[in-house]
Image 1 (tube, helix red, strand yellow):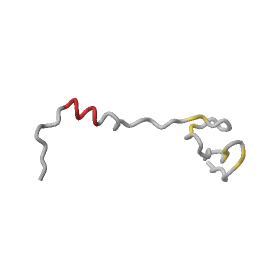
Image 2 (cartoon, one colour):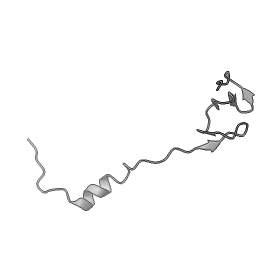
Image 3 (cartoon, helix red, strand yellow):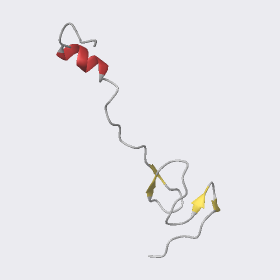
Image 4 (cartoon, rainbow, N blue to C red):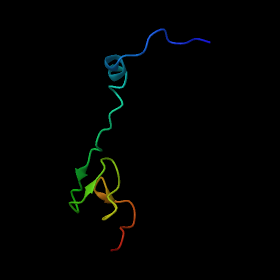
Length: 60
């Protein structure tokens, strides 16, 4: 069974994990309602996508 000859150092471990960081989601403002929403998604408050109604808006 293969085993590592030497312990992996902190620097090498950090370099390997450099792409594991979490990033915040990109949030844009809906032009119709001003609510925050994800890009390329339907605004759930108004039901608009690309200037037209796609789904029924949610009632509050």
